[in-house]
Length: 173
Image 1 (cartoon, rainbow, N blue to C red):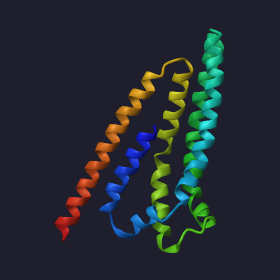
Image 2: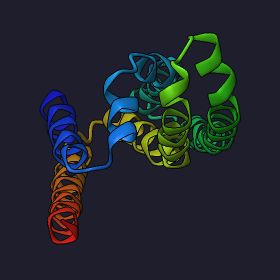
Image 3: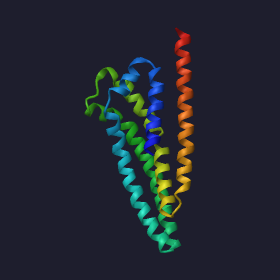
Image 4: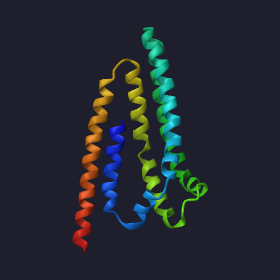
């Protein structure tokens, strides 16, 4: 997971090296992004750990009725939280950035960046909960395979986009 995170950051830097001025500044100069994003991610990670404990207990006890109920409740709560966190994140970006004294010259770009991030936030939450459920019943390989597959695809996509931006930048000169 740590290597995947580093890979994404490296690919993001590669793309941003060739992107236009203030947008790069908004990403590089703002330490607020991790604080805003991590606040919601850590909350949800706590929820997924708690759910996996309950699911693991019922799985270990071979109580299939309670296991199914716990998984169904977890899935329903995950989708509710996906909608809630996406809306809260998307709507709350401007007040949060104002509260954190984001510089005005990068404020629009910082807002746009976080809006894009929160628009795709549900995928992260669904993966985290899905992998927690699978691990709680002893399946550790499928989350790993999915993570490797999406990491490779994400890296390739970011590299392709970065290359496209690089080519467009130099052909415009």
